[in-house]
Amino acid sequence: MTARSVCIYCGSRHGAASSYAADAKLLGTSIAQQGWRLVYGAGDVGLMGEVARAAQEVGGETFGVIPTHLLSREVGKTDLTRFVITETMHERKKVMLMNADAVVLMPGGAGSLDEFFEALTWRQLGLHDKPIVLLDTEGFWGPLKTLLDHVVAQGFAEASLLDFVHSASSPEGVMEILSRELA
Image (cartoon, rainbow, N blue to C red):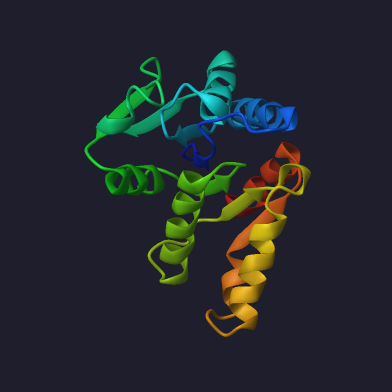
């Protein structure tokens, strides 16, 4: 079987809880130990840097994509297996998603949400059928799940939208979902 690739959307900051970085490290390690490639935003800061360094430390393959205007801000991690520089954020998101078999949303900010909603919208429109998983560290994504329920309840999406998004409270749970979905 061909090795799988998992796209991680996550913060370029560490966030308020130390558990966010701990989960980033464990998820990066777990993806690499599974023999899967990590696809992410190519930054060496925040949770992005944590997940990538953890994957690299156990010999994992890493594929990073960063737009030119974020090279200095996100400290482009040039020691990745593959380091791609794009012109725009839109191009970055497209390259990341098209080079992955699944998407995981870790805690993050507006950029992570932008990536998530584009992947979810594309899934809803039938442009891909990749699993989308929330790493819900300490209930971080509870408000997002409530919002998605509200969107469906108010008639702005079919209930099937909720079936496109899996959720796990730990990296181990994410790996269980990915193992099942990518089998």
